[in-house]
Structures are given as C-alpha cells and as structure tokens.
Image 1 (cartoon, rainbow, N blue to C red):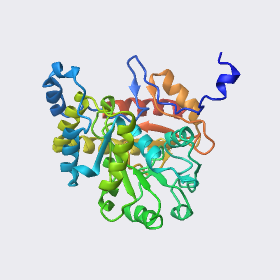
Image 2: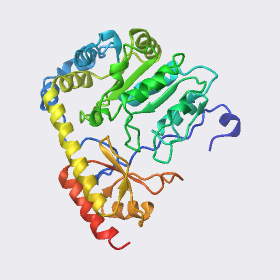
Image 3: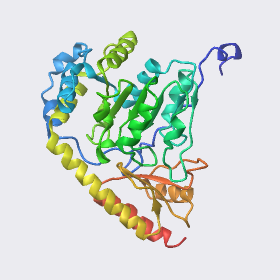
Image 4: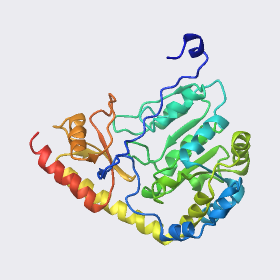
Length: 354
C-alpha cells in the first residue's frame, strides 16, 4: 500500500492494454502480427552477427538501418528516424512536437495508445467522432489545434483514406504537425510519404511489426524533413542514445533489402484477407472495407462479447473492446489460410445456432 502523501506526487495514467499473448498452442488472430516468418535474409544476418561485439554499445545513429531505409524510400538519411518499434517513435513524437496549450486531435475510435501518451505527457486533446461508417470527417480537423495524429489505415476499423484526403488535412493545418501513422499501409495503397517534400508539417511513421514479420525485433521509424528529424534525435539523445540493439539494426537492414520477399508476403495476406472476408459475409457477418491485415466484423444476430468468449474457449484468439460504439465488433488478424479456415469453420458451427 502506497501512503497518501506519496501518491499525490506520483504520475497516474490509464495504461494501454496489449493483446493477449497465449503461451500454449492457439490460433492467434488478436495482435495483428504477420503469420509468416521474416525474410530468409534476416536469418542470414542474424547468424552472421559477431556476438563478441555485444559487449559494445550499438551505433547510436543506427546508421546501417537508416541507410537501408533511406535507399528504399529514396530520401536522405537525414530524413529517417528509427526507434524501438513504432510505439517508441510515436511516443517520442508526442513528447517532441505536441507542446502547445491547444488540444491535439485524433479520432474517437483509433489506436488507444494515443490517449495514453497524451495523458502521460499532460497534453490536452480532443477526439472528433468518426461518422456512422467509421470514417474521419476532414472538416473536424480544420479547427485550431496543437497537432494532429491518425492511423491510415485506421485501427481497429481497417479503413484507408486516399492521399487527397490527407493532403486536405495537411493544407488546412500548416501551423500544426500532422503525424500519419502508417502501421498497415503496405496492405492498403499509396503512402503519405509521397507528400513529404510538399508539406514541412508532415511526419509519417511505419513499422516492421506487420508487413515485415518482425514484431519481436521492435523496429519502427519516422520519415519527414531533416529539420523535424533533427528535433526527434535531439529528444532521443537527451535520455537514451543507444535505443536499437545490434541484432535489430542488422536484421532490420537485411529485411528492407529483400523487396521480393516483402511483396510476396503482402500479396499472400491480401489474398487471404479477401477470401476470409467473402466467407464471413456468406455467414451473415458485416464488416468495414479492410485495407489492413485484419478484419473488423460483426454479426447482426450474434453478440460479439459472447462470440469472443466462445472463440477463446476453443483457443482461437481475436480482439474485442467493451466500447459503446464498437462493442459488437471483433477485430480479426489475417492469419494463414489454414488458421482462417479454422476460424471460419468455428463460425459456421456456432453462428448457425444463433
């Protein structure tokens, strides 16, 4: 028990709740990981690591990985910032760029870590509501603000907005930093990276956890103009210079260079996503148009909380939130074809009895 006089000076926030990580064999469709292994080049890079060098700190500039990413996106190395997963990168962005007295803006239904960081760093915020189709209303972001952040595609709704929508928000907010969180963009369409040179207020973040099958390595990055990237590095160096391990740097660079495997992996997931969506629709499920590596679904005659529990009893893990607007939806990660068949077979047996 913490005494009251100590509690008054302790920072308290409502933490982010991560997806469950079952320790026994299960059909794991709850945390949007990639169901396939990383590129074979990652294994080669890992096996080639000089473990004697582990006694030394890693390169604080993350030069090997930064160079690989800059080459991949055809930008300068001074336009890349890397961190320990995109959560680390985004957290540093909140700390670095959202410092005015005006509220930052992000959707009411979105990645729930945004609210956690805003509370943690004492950043005022407002959450414009998505419309009834779970889409952002761009005019809601024309108001005065201290910054804007949103995922594209959004999570957990899986909805993707085209570049003209993003450009409209950027053009109406030239005095604010706009962060586009593209954790799932490789399954969707064009990236806002195309707008980097036209808008000096744009930061795009991406991750290795989804399309590159490296959630366990914790690699994320931001791309922007050199001035904003310099600001991010200044904050990073102020409290931890050595954020990326030697293994993550080497394996991450190897993954970026294997473009063929990357594209092949994405195609498989999109094909499985579209097949699974079709099968679920045959069973009466309705869903948003997914442009991510997951489906956001509900059944008009079946309670989502009950279905979530019954799936879990069969060791099939999906994600469910007890939220007023999305409480009847399940978020289902796209797994392998075999995993999705197991899920759909369960749905056939159980929803037929509703």
